[in-house]
Structure formats: C-alpha cells, structure tokens
Image (cartoon, rainbow, N blue to C red):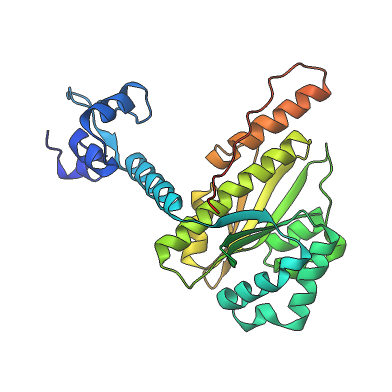
Length: 288
C-alpha cells in the first residue's frame, strides 16, 4: 500500500512501521491485536496505517531501553550533603562558573539541609552524570517563580516539608546531564534519572504526600524538549527564549505519573477505610 504525500507525513504503512520498530511480521501482528500499537483505518481503505508520532515515540523508548541495558555501573539514589561536591562540579560544567560561586554553594547546602528529600543523583561508575533538584515551596515563592524569579533565590524560609495529606506545589530548580558524552547517551541518562524519580514519587504517594503541581523553567533546547516529553505545558514566556512550564498532576496523563497516581489514590482510600489492593512496586535494573 502506498500513501499519498499528505498522508505519508502523518502515517506509516504496516511495512514502514514494522521496519521502524525492528519487529518481525508475527511480533508486529501481535502488537496490533493486543493494541500495543494502534491500528488506524482510514475511510475507503482496508489496510491499517499507523501514527508516525506513536511509532517514533515507541521506537525511541525501545532504543533508550536497549542503550540502558548496555550501560553498566549505573546507580540512581537520593543525594546527601556528602554528594554536593560532585553536584556542584557538574553544575559548573553545565551552567558555568556562576553555579560554583561561594554564595551558590551556600544556597545549595542550605536548601538540602532544610529539606533533605529533594535532590536525586545518577552515577555512572564513580562519576555523577545527571541530577535533579525538586523542592516544595509556599504559594508566595511559587508565584515569584512563575514571574521569572530564579529558584535558588526564592529563599529557604519559603521551603515546605513533605507531609501526608497536605497538597504541595514543587519546583524543579535544576536538572542537568553531563556534557562529556554524546547527545544520545545524555538523553539516556536523563531518561533513567526520570525513571528513577518515578519510584521516589510512588513512595511519596504511598505515604500520602500529595503533589498537586510541578513547575520548571528552561531556555535550552534539550531542557525544553525533556520537559515537554514529560508532559509539562508552557505557561509563560520570560524573554530570551526562557519559558516557565507547569505539570498539573491531577489532569496530566503523563506516563511517569501513573504509579504515583495509583499510590496516592490507594493512600486516600486507606484513610477513608476502603480496602485496597497494594500497589505493585517497580525496580530499576542497574548492573554494578
């Protein structure tokens, strides 16, 4: 089956989709029958076509997973004060000298001391290759951030604590991957970092820690791409190609939130005396 130029911009034929996914005919047909990939039947056509957007997304995830399997020595963990030196070194590499100024080092330390459950690292061997800082703030700080205030300057006094039953809004202040590896590997590090973080938020959900919204800002193509891929929506342009993004947990259908939503639902039902089925915990594989 051959598609018109207009349709070919949007859809793959079965042969094209199968080639993109690297599947044999039997596996591809099974994916179609089980709706792992959606078959689309256009008017007056008997043969199914497949969304390029969906197929490309699946192919990218498969490539990331295969690359991750080849990487050895990866370790994802919640950071402590003892890990700050490596974080500052990577921040210097990614964001420049301002990230390692004495006042910035002091801010990072004071934030982590005020709420130690907020910073997450990914190591490849002994080297920090990706990290993320996510802090809960009060409404005054959230409003300032949405107007363009940098996260590190919002003030420790405006930090909240993760407490059961209290809806919180959070800000991703920094998310960085090392620049010393090829772009594809950086993308893999970012993906694995986010996958690791999904386990953290599932734990939060099981403990009744309710996150209502998450905010972030970026002015880099890679940062904007990662945020959009994770389901964030642009809510404000700050100028100089810098944007503020919002992830509304309640309305988002982002895959990374599936486990968290189920966990917080389970916790709420338990508080109301409703018997629930325990959430099935996932684990990230890492060879050491």
